Image 1 (cartoon, rainbow, N blue to C red):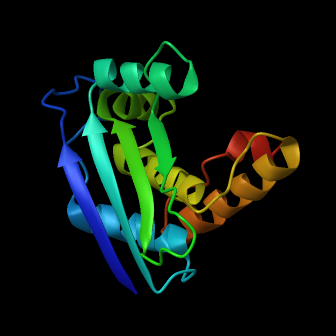
Image 2: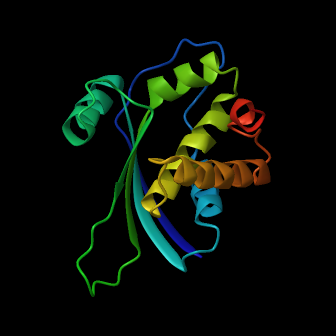
Length: 161
């Protein structure tokens, strides 16, 4: 598969949480996106922008009506009919939120970053979690993909109920 990821780092901060470390590498992002694509495409292009909380908050407010930062935003490409390019869209990841959540959930930062990128990529592919049936499908896929990458299941407490 031909995968082209444009990584933009607009976050200059550091994180003081116990489980924080450096940002994922381009190799990490490629591995996670490739796993989420699961061979569904011969080629894919997307952007991953790593931001701080103020930028995440502004985008979340503008596009989702939520006046707070969030861990990841997905913007699927809306291509006109007949335009055949491999553009998937854009992911915007709020680094401080991801590091905070990893710490609060007792996960390694890599496991949570992987989850967020897989989750966002599935959104770019058209998956959603608005209703219970769609949420179950998406969570099952995320779990399958992440455990296949040797990360723990992201919804263990949900799956046990």
